[in-house]
Image (cartoon, rainbow, N blue to C red; front, side, top):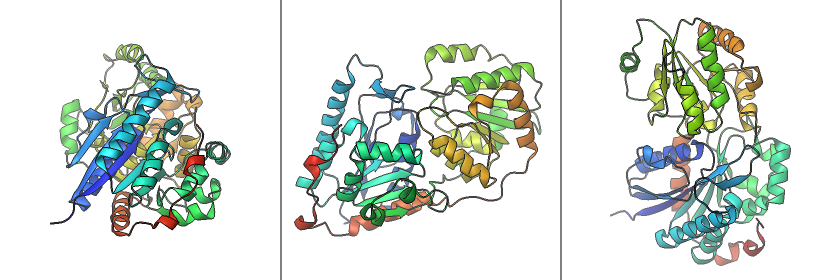
Length: 408
């Protein structure tokens, strides 16, 4: 009988749904490819329970954080200071690692965790469980080179990548954007970097005809799906889109998904448009892929997961990237547009009239024929499988700087 493999996944989830959705997709692939694996996901997402979990995966919900438009964090709902919330999360993460005793820790995006909350766990594993492999999953683009370099230098991230992490899995391709060059990764970190390609998604099983019937589409009527991810910062885009529907006659049906993390007051304002013709408003669906698969055009921000879903389905897309906090979405949208994969519109240009003309143009344009490497889920799972078969480092190879790393 094969030994049970234990994999701990850390997904800090302070803004939107991206980290959670990415972690669940990877966990699902691991569950399929490594049938004797058991996984434990640590997440701060408020809606984690709304998604179907892969087999043999359990979940621990961390106290939720949210990110202000300035980029600063705060407790989402609890009457606690940020320091109190981080301290509590830090203890929960460490206790989970001590009890679960993972063979591998997979960290999504944030090498030290929010405000360094992962550091006690990294120290514990390196000291008391040196056989545990520690892996960082890095999305295609973090932020602008200058900002990322400054943040990583100030936060002690470079020593973490050099001394603590055994592997860095890139959920992208250096030919499109090379983080090693852009972010000045040290040679030791570059030697650990494994490009895995983009995390493409499998096609949904739901027949598009079923979606058409559900939405009441007439024969041949195009479908435009507007999604803004979690919805925390998507209000203005949806508002402009609904104003477009009020002021322009359109030949298509619109499905607008506001996202579960949008403020209730803003969601109520948007609901006033529910009586518009050829419009369906939804707060959330855990099966967004089925609706994207049925769409003739997807209008969205340029978050990593939604972009991967659009590319996997070969859909026409209009991307309106987030313009605050980080440059990541704008950079991604620009790179994809340069390859003819998407249409783009800056958020300040997304007026009702401009939206109308851009959508009509995009609907008349053939779907893209080019694509990107989208087999990342299989490659990530295979790389984790290989890591789990490698021998542990000896004591002389262990990092010696853990007490000096990162001062939050």
